[in-house]
Length: 147
Image (tube, rainbow, N blue to C red; front, side, top):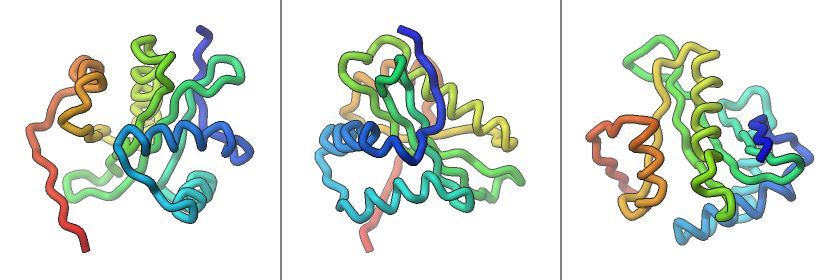
């Protein structure tokens, strides 16, 4: 495999969409099409803090990650939230997820971030095998309240 990690181009929506839908399916959710379209638009708007990278083997998209820079009270530099990470089944265990995480880390370092962070569901044991190798668990529990 000849892996290349790079920002997704605006003309690659049709390659990205099946992976985005696969990610949603994994988490048993369905994001409305208008939100998906807006998200894609934001990835390609230089004024937005949202970004998307793809892992390619030649022209084949094997994985995606989305990350967001945001302010924090703990640092002058922005913090990087790795919001989504998904790889196609055939590429799992072959370093694609790790390469995407490292690429986000590199992008965060460019803007002076002290760290990247992400979440996964407690049942996502397969991903946790990788995450436990490349990062430390924060010990924090995430709460959310619908509005």
